[in-house]
Length: 194
Image: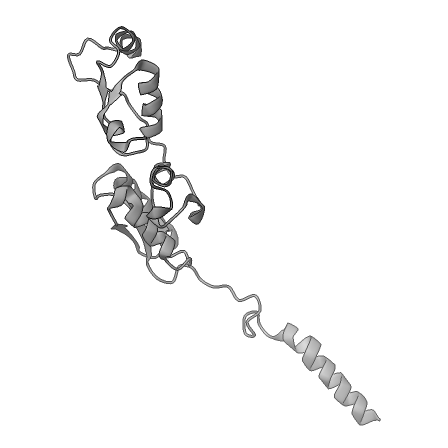
């Protein structure tokens, strides 16, 4: 009987107390996984040298210092940003391939082209917003339009005489509002057939 009690106590010790005496992580409990353990890729869906690319390179430099791993900027251009968006959507969701895009470009792509892009807005989660890009309305130097009041007055007096062009898509919806308000012609909008 005494032998059975000793075996029971040894069993209780092994099952209950011994795991508490083993350092954390040896049995896989509480094991912390280091991240990152390899380089991270920031995918920029636009050309080298543009605003998104320049900002991505600044973010990459900051992340390298904070994480202690290389952060590589990879430009995947084409389809108005669709190629880069699609590449990140298809990547392993392990945090080593990150989309570095400007809002609302992806959302506008989906609104214009739909599911044919191979990705949807729901396929991405915004982890951080790192910049605020100001926009500007500009005219050629020497123009009689010196401010917004001049612009509005001219637009009202001269319907369909003004034209507008935009770089990229981020301002597209706002430009549509301005055009509609002031009866301005946008050659790009005619091509879109929105």
